[in-house]
Length: 192
Picture 1 (cartoon, one colour):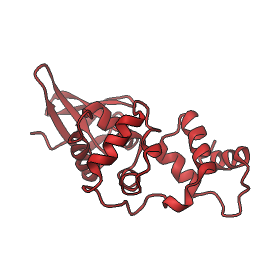
Picture 2 (cartoon, rainbow, N blue to C red):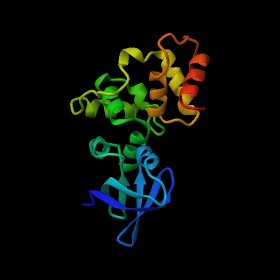
Picture 3 (spheres, rainbow, N blue to C red):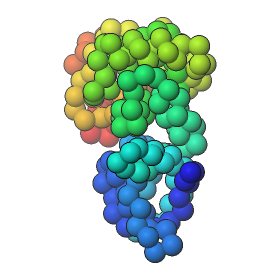
């Protein structure tokens, strides 16, 4: 099992890295968090998980060991393979995924591209007793329909769910309830 890599990033894309370790370039599929913390030409340390299939050996890299552990947990859900698990972790932080499961909010999980209502319901059902609520997640009470629409708009503009949630959390308490104005303020908070 390859638990981690320490080497030079030779190639960098949003979904994949080539890391040179001991003169060998290893292709690693990464979550968005891992891709954002690395740059080509830099030395990096990545927690990894090697997935062995009949026809392929695929290496996945993560921003943290906690993210790797959540990946392992997601793989235990029937119908969730490694690519889908990595996709989920690219759009939801581990804390926000825990919060979605604990509060039984499938709509937070269906915002991940490739996840439908049935898969979200299956994830909630199978992980219900396995995950404690996230400590740094948006409180369920503070996430209403208006903020949900703001999040959908931000995700539609290309931001990750984590970025959108952080922007919504950063809105002033006295921010207007108008969706367009909240989107404008969220974009300002994101620097766009």
